[in-house]
Structures are given as C-alpha cells and as structure tokens.
Amino acid sequence: MDFQFIEEALVKQEPVKIQVNSGEIFSGWLVYSYNSSFIQLDTGFGCIAIAKESIKYFSYVYK
Image (cartoon, rainbow, N blue to C red):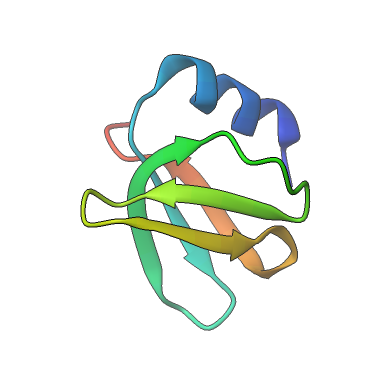
C-alpha cells in the first residue's frame, strides 16, 4: 500500500475510493486516525474503520 498517497489524501481532503479484498467499494474522505493499523473513512453518514491489510485498491474519486 502506498502510505505517501494516504498522507497526500489526508492533506488535500479530496474524496477517495477504497476497494477491500471482499470486493466492496467505499468512498469518502480520509480522517486522521491514531491507530496505524486502520484507515478512518468519513462516508458522509458516519465514519468507518478499514483495516489497512484488507485494502485491495485505493484511488481518488475524481481522477
């Protein structure tokens, strides 16, 4: 996983899409997390935590 991309997305505050190993796709804004094993994603309806090792694909929504 590209940790530099995660840091960049946190700073830019652009929406991202994340596909996990099970095939589900989530989109939203990254939120800073104190736990380095998880990524916090604000979906607009609430925050979800996604384990970093379960992420298959990670990109910006609008690119």
